[in-house]
Image (tube, rainbow, N blue to C red):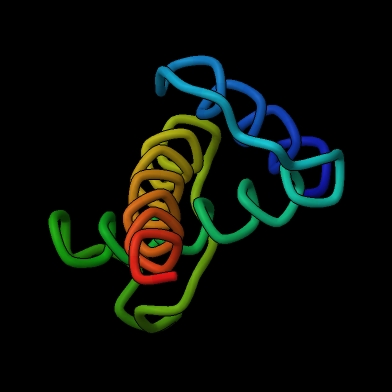
Length: 85
């Protein structure tokens, strides 16, 4: 899961334009969060794996999509907090 999370985090950072000053740990965390977001979206959209529940990890494609969503949310939160200072 760590390797998939790193790959998803790196791809999400490459796909979404702009600078993201985060290191390897931040990229890994982005990928892990993205994997859970992708798993949740897969649960909602496809209704599979009801036994596993909504909090589950996803594959590489779901992780990348989830990481892109997480990165966009992170930028919105970070951007709004800096604008108030």
